[in-house]
Image (cartoon, rainbow, N blue to C red):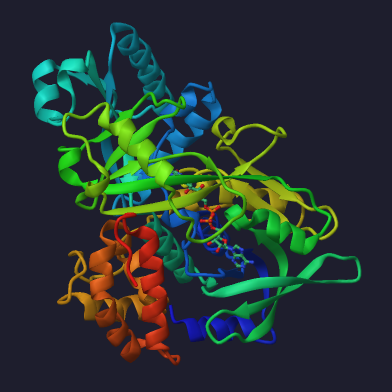
Amino acid sequence: MRRTRMKREAQAESAIFDVVIIGGGASGAWLALDSASRGLKTLLVEQYDFAACTSSRSTKLIHGGLRYLRRLDIGLVRESQREKNLLLHMAGDFITPLKFQIPCFSPYETLKYKAGLRLYDFLSQNEKSSGAYSREEMVSKSPNLHHDKVHSLLTYFDAGFDDSRFAIELLKKAFTCGACLLNYTRLDFFIYDAKHKIIGARIKDQIDFEEFEVYGKTFINATGPFTDIVRKINNPSETKIMCLSRGSHIVVDSSFLGTDEALLIPKTVDGRVVFMIPWKGKTLIGTTEEGQAKPEKDPAVTPEEVSYLLSTVRQFLRHGPEEKDIISRFAGIRPLVRRIPHRSSKILSRRHEILIESTSKLVTLTGGKWTTSRLMAEETLNRMMAHDLLPFRPSITSTLLIQRLDNIPSLPVSEETLKEKIHYYVKEEMATCIEDILSRRERLLFLDPQRALQLAPKVAEILKTELEHEYPIEQDEKAFTKIVNNYCPQSVRLS
Ligand SMILES: Cc1cc2nc3c(=O)[nH]c(=O)nc-3n(C[C@H](O)[C@H](O)[C@H](O)COP(=O)(O)OP(=O)(O)OC[C@H]3O[C@@H](n4cnc5c(N)ncnc54)[C@H](O)[C@@H]3O)c2cc1C
């Protein structure tokens, strides 16, 4: 998967793609795989690195969405449960079962959540089902929980994963099916025929700043939080359909959870839920739900969000984390679709939307969740075929196996493993800078930003020998230091 080869393929004079996908997050990656595996000539362009935006900043859950039962969004839960079970089967190397605990504080709460979990199990039709711990088990399975306050500890199963790693694996699979994939390539304008149907796009390479045109029969806007911007590139008078909501996480030592099971805190001051997730040897705490004015790659976590997360989990733990215990923090932007004007993002559905613009035929896929993105892609291409935008070919993604393709050490990144890993990430995964390596192919930036900064010069040195294009080493190191500041706890400021 070499970038120069991909670019040549996209630029080839004779290249007319059946499907051009704008956006390389969860939606774009599944669209590329679905399209290429149907035998369609497919191009994907991503303005940053693959999964650089929302799709690397999730809570790392493939889940049925227990909390959506509160809103009686039964259809979404059933759909998500089905997708979760399918993904566990087809991508077991990357998606693994995760047991959750729910602390209940009264007999009423116990009854209420037990009933909810029964329904959740029923909608899942999975043999791994919910249960409850005895008092003794509660102490051993959740040693840091406030046992004296808790009436019962219920359990259920969902799944965990590494989001950006999985996006890259999906893209590698799409490549093996023939897809052409370009990171750091931004779509700026569309090109139209006499009837104002889109036939091409002007795109700009963000590494060498070369501008060029690509041509295609169909174009899909899969740009998540950037959806409205791309819709406006196509039609400046287009109305906004997105409601952006920021969700933040903090990362603390694994001892605060004290178990390899996740904890769902079922009640917060603003009527939401907060998760504590065991992830790669640390504990991830999230998330918040705050209005976000405009899309951005690296949204900042505010001090208020940090206080909210800390105070929420402290009520449930014997030794709760404090600000000084925060190792890292990160935020992502939910691309929610506002079907009813002025609705708060907290009650907007996580369902997806597929729109086909009547004249230009620009297809938009937006909303949804990581968990349902395979199905979203399948439905989008089916819809395009039903509208005669593409010849009919059945989707086969539900029958594919997504397996590890590399044999590089799965050890945490270190000075010893760095060279071998970077060689692979450049050659097979189109990594181009320090952030691509330490943020999305390895997750060190999310897990320990200060350690990531220590490793950065070594990464840069190796990158210089691996990359095919000219690599501005000092500029990249400076840019990475700036990014690291966004992840470091507030008390740490790096220059
Ligand atoms: C805090 C948080 C926690 C979440 N947790 C979970 C979870 O645990 N489980 C779950 O199932 N879901 C979760 N979600 C939802 C899930 O992460 C998103 O639904 C999903 O990642 C959205 O993917 P996407 O591809 O639509 O958007 P994105 O990942 O944002 O991808 C869109 C891409 O389009 C690119 N782009 C934009 N404009 C252009 C252009 N002009 N040219 C080229 N490229 C362009 C962007 O750079 C971006 O990379 C969470 C979301 C948030 C915010």
